[in-house]
Length: 394
Image 1: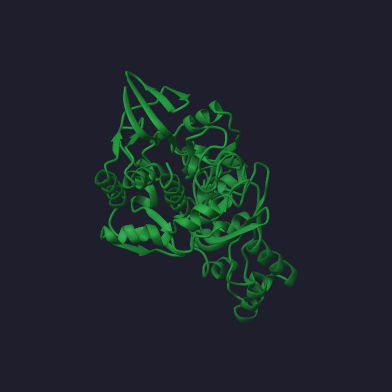
Image 2: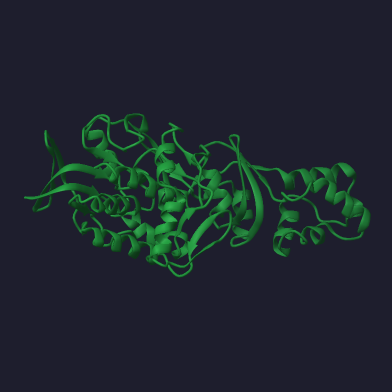
């Protein structure tokens, strides 16, 4: 039996941050992961460049049934704290937009930094080691992992959620939480593309697959985001759709403003006065691709010279461009979701230490908790902050 002070289950962003923080305090730390490689989600994030944090991180950027829970950890380990480590390791980075910080080179720069910090502090990482059983004792925990047995004083669950199962995601963390009496709030895919089954909608989206529309505003359930939209052969994607998907529930409609920089009705009437002989699709092609302008006319409107529309007709066309109402049939699910919404109920976890209120010396960090960030580096910042919070006390 191998005995250590701390065992962390999960060698992802939160687990590695927790490991290096605890090991730097002189704790004997062992990280276990069933995968064959550490930090797989880090490596694929941000298109391979890792959007590792956001300069404008605030508690309002996070969804949770307990909205105050994230405040303490985020305040005590900020985006600037993580950035200091990035700069110390001389990792080149840039702001892409909206405070999103990306590596100039590749996501592995961030993973190598975390692994280097763990190694320097003396934390051990053991891969290909699934945990089969966990037993609690008065002085800690015993973990059975195939033919190996481990004992620890403190146990940290950093195993993530259900998103992207091809990277090894599983419900392990929820099972552990339930084993020790924790409530699991309903989980669902977040930051995920929408799918369409309505024949006309699907035909429209498929015909425009690969077409992007800049700076759309999408609204649902009192929330709105302004970002780029992308049509796919399954439905709708792009940053603005991923953002709003976390607030959408099955059956909800969404409103899309395809021309958020103008009142489309007023603009069309102005165009009619200035260019009465131009066709509608020609005018629309100033704002969209020619193909999209043509398809809008084929699916939504008729295509004639502007002078042939009356004021009411142009106003209605403009209103639809500014407020396209549709009801997605669903999402692409955990297969492509960037996060899992829901999870371990934070009402039963200390916001300062991440320790379970049901079981002494048991901690939950990262995505397994009911805390999910917006798109743009916020989920990584939650991983760093929650990992640091637990690592500072275990």
